[in-house]
Length: 131
Image 1: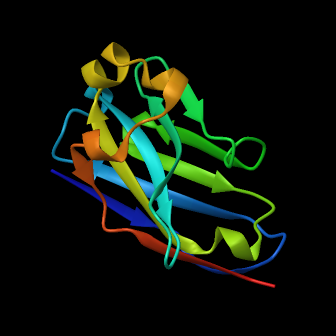
Image 2: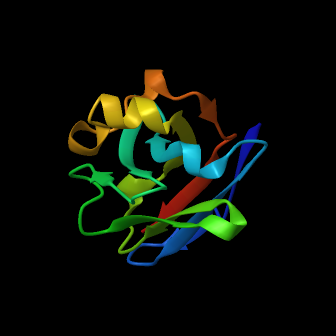
């Protein structure tokens, strides 16, 4: 069971980037997926999470208007589209998965996916935004 991120890199301020997270070894639709980030010297921050079966989606205030989570079910892939990036978005971005039952039972669609409840984590992808 693993999640593998890709798509990180260096981008100029105002630019866009799309991260991918490929899931393997699990029943893709039985999980909800989340994106987190951690900047140097800062705590991990939850951005957005989504159930795959019915696309229930939570976005943090940081993510609203600029970051969008989506999925390609046949490819068992979750994406994070990031637009209008700024240097404050520089961080390691990680995807994670939580059992769908946990997501629904705890109403994560209204309050986000807590990092300490995520069952599976990817290795992280560095995103650097230059000014």
